[in-house]
Length: 115
Image (cartoon, rainbow, N blue to C red; front, side, top):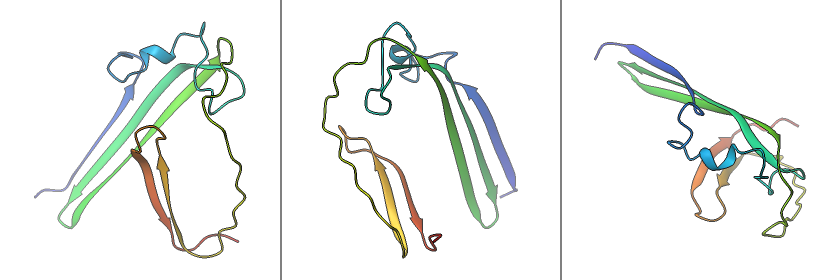
């Protein structure tokens, strides 16, 4: 297979409904109560992705960026938030999981944590 790389940058608000962002762009209403003490709305959203193919394998990466603006009135939190203090002194794995569905959004392994 010949070696090649593909990359792209997308404005996710050009077609907000395709990405499920139409509901969170209205600044008259607050969104995301679990991540900010102030109500927020999405003002900008973009994603960049790259995939590289070679004779020895395949690599890919993507990054998604959102810009939020103040919006609406803060609704009461739907769940209790706990605080946990942890010190990582040896190799560890991690997962970022969406609470309701259990969908794993990000997974990783840190073999040599910084002190």
